[in-house]
Length: 581
Image 1 (cartoon, rainbow, N blue to C red):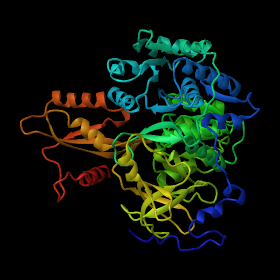
Image 2: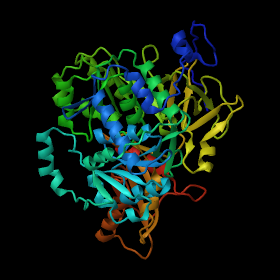
Image 3: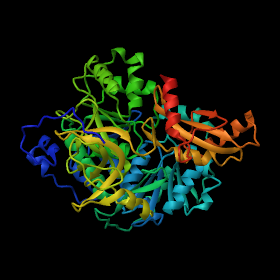
Image 4: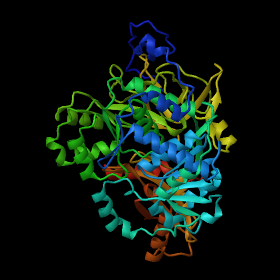
C-alpha cells in the first residue's frame, strides 16, 4: 500500500469527513427513498399517464408504452397458462429484442424469476445454467437451438419458446433477414416442447383467471451470471429492491435527461449494465430505447446520424471504434447529453482523446465513467459535473457507501491509502444462487454492522471523496466489456489429452482492449502438429463463449514457474507487454 500524494487539499464544504462525496449531492437527493414496488410495478408507476410515449424502437419499428404494457400483460397470462407461478424460474437466452424485454417484465409481473443468459454462451454452458436454476421455461434465440437441442433433455425445461431476431423487424428487413441469415439457421420441429413466439402469446386467450402479484420488494427477481471474483460461474441473485434502486440512482446521475429523449441500448440486456442502466432506468424515465441486438458499425453510424440519440452507453471498445472510423469525421454530436463508459477501465489517454472527439463534433459534454460489477447490480459509482476527474471512477451513487480495506481483511483504511475497494448499499446482491460459501467469501459484515461487497479491485479514495481504480486484485481479463476468466479457459484446454499444463493471460488488442492468449505445454509423449492445434481450438469453440475463446495459442516446451512451483502468469504478462512495446 502507498499514500497517494496527489490530493492533500480539503474541500470547504460542510459534510461528514467519513463520507465526503455527500457534499456533491443536494439535501433533497440525500433524503431519497428507494421504492418498495416490484420491478414492473415501478415501471408502470414511473410512466404514469404518459403511455403514448415511445418505449422501444427496434430497427425503426416503434412501440409505445401502452403497446408494451399490453404485450407484457398478454405474456404474463401466457406464462400463467403454461403453469408458471410465483418463484418459478423463467430463463431468457436472448439478445436485445422486444420479445426479450416483454418476457423480462412479464416474468416479474407474475412473481417469477428472470434468469438472464448470454446467447453466445457455448451449448454446455447454457445447459449448466439451466441445470443450476432448475428452470422449466426457456425463451431462446433461434440460432442457439442447434447448440442445445441434444442436451436439453438433461434439464427440467418442458417448454421452449423460440424467437427469431427478425420477429419484430419492419417487413422489408424481416424478409431480408429470413432470406439470408434465417435460411442458415436450423429450426426445431414446433410441437408441444417447442413453440413460436406468436403461438406463445395466443395462449393468453386460454387464461381467464384473475391473478395478483404477491411478490415483495426484497424477494428474488433476477438471476444474472458472472464468474464473480474467482472465475467460477455463479448465479447472482438480484431483488426487486436492488434493481429499482439502481434505476432511481441512475435518474439522479442523468438529471438532464427528459421524457422522449433517446438512448441507444447496445449493451446486452443479459448483463447488469445493459439490463439496468440501458433498459430499465431509461424506460422509468420515459426515454425512448433504441434496441440494438447485434453491433453493426454501419447501422450504428446511421443510428447516430439519423436518430440523434441523447444518451450513449458503452464499453471502451466502442469509443475506440468510433474514434478510428473516418465516417464520424463530420457527424454532428451536439444532440448528446451523456456518453457513459463502463464495463472496463477507461484509460486517461482514451478519456482525453474521446473528449476531444466529442468536442470537435459539436458536443458540449465530456465522457462520463461508471464503475461497478454484476454483484452490485452493475453501477455503484459515477462521474458527473464536479467529480469527473481524469482517471477517476467518480463518487458513490446516492445511497451507496465505499470504503478501502486492507486486502483480505475487513480493516478499513484512511482516505488516500490504496487497498481493496468495498461497496455497501441498496444495489448489493442478495448473494450467489445456491452457493453460500462463495457468498460469504465476498459479502462480509464489517464492524459498523453493514454488509460490504469485497470487489477484488484495488483503488483509493482521495480527500474530496473521489474514487480511483488502480488495478485488479483478482485475475480476470476484460474483453470488449465482458469478463473473461483465465481459469475457466485453462480448465477447458486442459481436457485435451495432449496438454500437460496451460496458462491464459490477457494481451492488448486494438479494439477489444484485451483478449485471451493461451500458453500451452504438451506432454512429453506428444509432438505438436496441426491436428492437435485444430482439436484444441475446436474444444474451446465447443465449450467456451465466443468472447472467451483465446485469440492466440502459443506452444512452449516449458512455462515459467514461481518459487512455489506454480505457473508464473505475471512473467508471461511482462513478456507480452515488452513484446507489444
